[in-house]
Length: 87
View 1 (cartoon, rainbow, N blue to C red):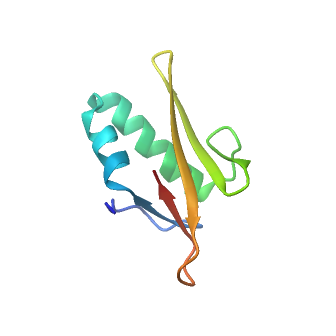
View 2 (cartoon, rainbow, N blue to C red):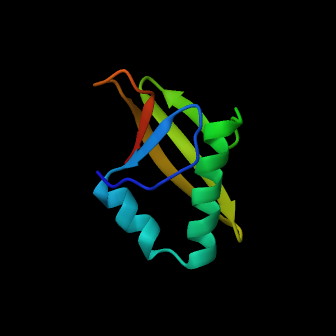
View 3 (cartoon, rainbow, N blue to C red):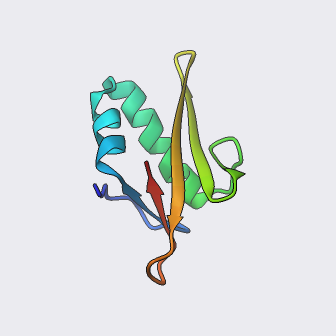
């Protein structure tokens, strides 16, 4: 898993390698907006940014320049920390 550093929030975030590689390939502004929205979702409860889809699957959503980016996520329940893994 790939870890990016974030400010403190309600939960930690980890990226699977494939998700990190996908984000790294985006243009800088799209990448910055996605990271900003993930950071914002960690601080503010906003269903437009981060919401449960069904079962154990969650989704981070970002709209940038008329393009919708969706990153699927799940909660890591292997330790006592609240950690979301983005896949």
